Length: 153
Image (cartoon, rainbow, N blue to C red; front, side, top):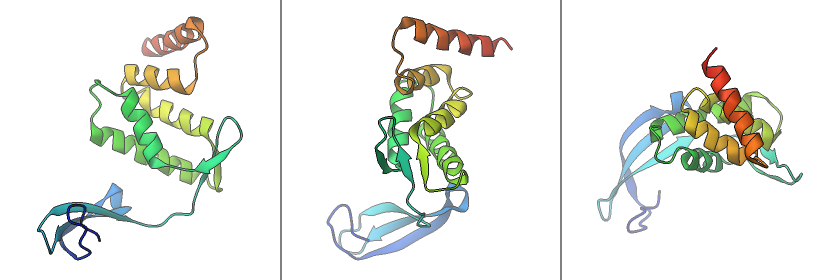
């Protein structure tokens, strides 16, 4: 594993432990040349999954894209990085459990919103406003009203 500091190819594993509910191994490594310590994750290689976007194009499923989208929506909110990572894990597990090798971006967005609605309502509304591409204030107000009705039941 190449050291991110000095780019030497020789490092030793200092510690290994399960991560992501046993679906990955987190390894602490130390560069044998400069002594820099870094973390790597090892996970089972999964079959590529294609996401069908709104415009009909396809792209490879990306955990990072989901992570970035939720992080943007959760900015300055009391939603920690651990929680965001857990949400991404849940979404990826659900997407892969559906089976097949293609899924629509709308389905993924819905999975994210189904989880976010119970995590933080502001993060949920922010994510929904981007995902649903609200055309006007009425659409935004409808979503808010739906969320408030949900709170009261």
